[in-house]
Length: 271
Image (cartoon, rainbow, N blue to C red):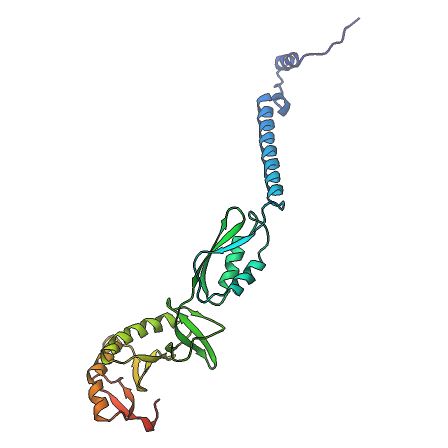
C-alpha cells in the first residue's frame, strides 16, 4: 500500500527543477522583503500615532493665548485697532494662524508692515511699522488719500490738518515719482526761501508747482535736452528780480521755454 506524506517545500522545488520547471519565486518565498515591509509599516504606524497624539495634545485647552504684546510704542495705531484684531484671533499658542493675524493687522489704516510671532508660553508678539505721511494725494475729484515716505498711497480715516502736508496729484502709480521730484524741487527752492504747497503731474507728464507765496510754476514735460531741473534753476536765478519788479503781481510763471519764461498776472488766472 502506497504512503502519502507531506512534501517539504525544498523537495517540491527539487522535483520541479528535475522536470525542467522553474521554481516559483513568489512574495511569500522572500522573507527578507517581508521583514523589510513589516519594519516600514511599523515605522509609519508609529509616526502616524505620534502625529495624532501631538495634534490632540495641542488642541487641548492647555495652551490658551492670554496676552498680545506690542514691541514698540505706537503713535497712529490705536489700542482699539489692536483689540479689534486680538478679539478675532482663534486657536491656542500652537494653532493660532500667525499669517492671518499679520494680514488683519496690515488692513488697519496706519499699519504699513506687521510682523507676528509666538511668545512663550501664552502670548503673541506684534512688531508694527506705522505709516508716516509725507503728503496728501488727490486721487480724483473728492477722493483724497495720503502718500507715505516710501511713495506709497494709503487711505486713512483721519487726515492731518490741511496745510501741514503738501498736496500731490498725478496718474495712478506715479506717487513715488512725484515724491522724488518734490524732494528735488524743494532742495532747489529752499535757496530762495520758498517751499512747495502742491506738486501736480498731468496725464501728459507735465509738471506744475504751487509755491507757498501763491506763485504757480508751469514747468511742462521733462526732456533730455531741456530738463526740468534746468528750468527750475533758471527760475531760482531770476525769482527775486521778478518779484521785486512786478510788486508781487505775478500769478504764473511759465518756464516751458528753452531760453526764457512768460509771466501772467494774478488777475488773468493761474492756469
